[in-house]
Image (cartoon, rainbow, N blue to C red; front, side, top):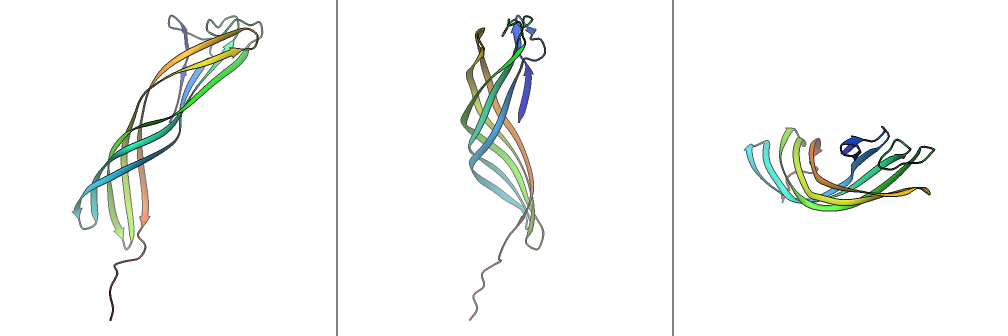
Length: 162
C-alpha cells in the first residue's frame, strides 16, 4: 500500500507543486484461525479471523520557497522531508477457498480486510536556518489483501503394514 497526497497549506490552497505526503505499509503479520466447510471432497470454503500487526510510515516533503505558505519562505527553494513510522495492532477477517486440482496439488485464494484504527501523529519539518513547521495528521489505517497461490501437500496417509 502506498498513497501520495498533495499537502494543503492554508485554507484549502495547495502548495506550489512539490509539497506531498505519503503513507506506506512496510510489512504485516497476523495470527488467525480458520473455520471451514467441505463443499465437495476437493473444495473447502472457509472464514478466517484474528489479530493483525502492520508497520506504517508517514512522510511529508515540503518545498521551502517564497511561494510556499506552509514551509517557506527562503530565497533558494530547498526540499525538506520528515518521516514517522509506527507498528499498529488491529483485527483482521476474511474468506477463502482451497481446492484440490490433482494429486497432491491445491489451488487457493483468499481475501482479507484488516483495520488498525486511526494513527494521530505529528511530522516536524525543519528548513535550514529558516523555520520549523509541525504538520499534524490523523490517518485511518486499513488494508484489503487478496492472495492466490498453489500448494503441494507432502506425504500421504499413514498406512500400517504387518
